Image (tube, rainbow, N blue to C red; front, side, top):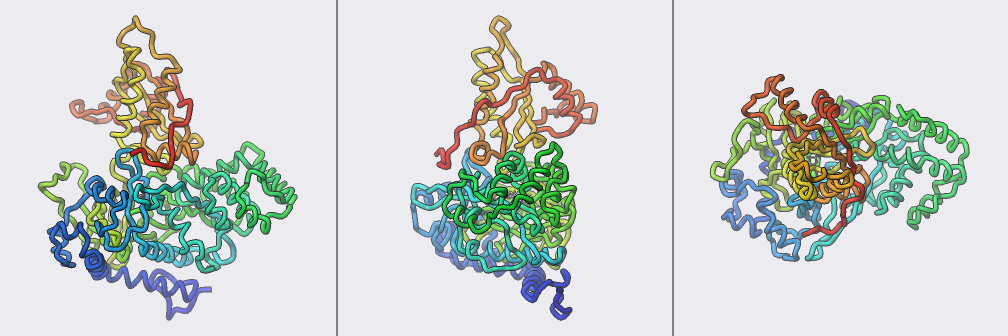
Length: 599
Ligand code: AMP
């Protein structure tokens, strides 16, 4: 029941008094965007005034924007690497932050093949929790009665390591789920999960997923929304159901938990949840045993009102598959966040994915923007970019996001390109355009052109003894297979016909050699998460890339400037390439991966 109009918000009538307060907070913060940003910067700079970093640039305790902008450079991760390495090695002096670095958050963005290490401080957990607390009241504006059931969310923790200096390094969500903020969150009838904490916090991904799926099945009629953080995660859960429904149905028939679930805390919790239910087991068997999985989500969870998954950015490629499994249920993209900083939320979460705009919340950090002009020459250190404030952005323009955080990142380029679509009060709203330099992505992996080139170079070493080289290549993220996988098209040149061409087996090994060269996030997805399938090389006939060029020129490309695209996804081009395939090769084994960093 909506509360009365006295507490009504311009966003809509709040569902509860508590929601009314949250919506009012959003209103006030977004109305005061510029003043909030000034306050945040001043707070960050006074908190960190004594750090080595700010002193090095002669800030002398100044906390105003002009001094900050004139003295502090805009940086990338690589610029900060010496400081980050010192912190990782155990230097406790205030290098970037005056507050102790509590841990490192490992980004899915990589540097030199390894996850970037983002320093964080304890109080940032409060800020992340604050942003999470805004999501449900906004959702309640659009979807009523979410307090009448539960959310089936597939949430996971991942492996963590220690840096040489003893700090924990793990992904931001692992850090959050393991925090007291999450584990002892107060009961909120609008936000009840089917997954017990014990399942979410189990580090064995099979046991975790199995238990979460089992609970989802047991509580199927109570489920009002089904979600994961990213679309790829939800599809992985559906795949898991396809592979494991028989065992799950057996457990439900007998009321006895699969012995593969050995985690004691899960077994204890499930003892109170799992009861024999022959009717339910029969229903699951009937739905899952057929070939047709279209609409499986609403068939099993008939009260699902929406899917809660991010389908913007690289995840947009999964929309057709999600639509297939869900009979096109609405897909809610609720928030935009990163290891460096949580940025903001979607104030219209039930809109179509193509319309999603995120509103950056000005209290989360200090935000600046580099106008992004794809045709402009690259930025040089000599002519620093002109940065624009959060409150001064122009609708329709694209910008690259630069952040300064309480944890000590100063004027740090995140690498995301955003387009302003409008304003909520004085706060701009953004369409996520893309992440810079990402060529291929299936799950959390982000492979850029240089990494792909390096992988090709390493693989072609194996061709040398056959006097064979790769004359051209391109790539494609194939998400039609389960799990998705990288496809690399190769045109080969066998230079010496006296020597036999590389065998099938050699080309298979080239696939593995490529995988071994790809970054650690790719290899983790392959090995630990099983969210990426074996890399595939498709060898195409000699002359195929020339045909590709002819095709591009026929569509208006300039002959002089033509370069073979390093990634393709346009159907006619794919059809041309696929019609010229001579042989197909898959990686015969898993690449090497351990949670430890290679360096
Ligand atoms: P990570 O540091 O691994 O947490 O990755 C953060 C990055 O994921 C962001 O910088 C974005 O590139 C991407 N990302 C996060 N949220 C979204 C979203 N809602 N839509 C599109 N991309 C996102």
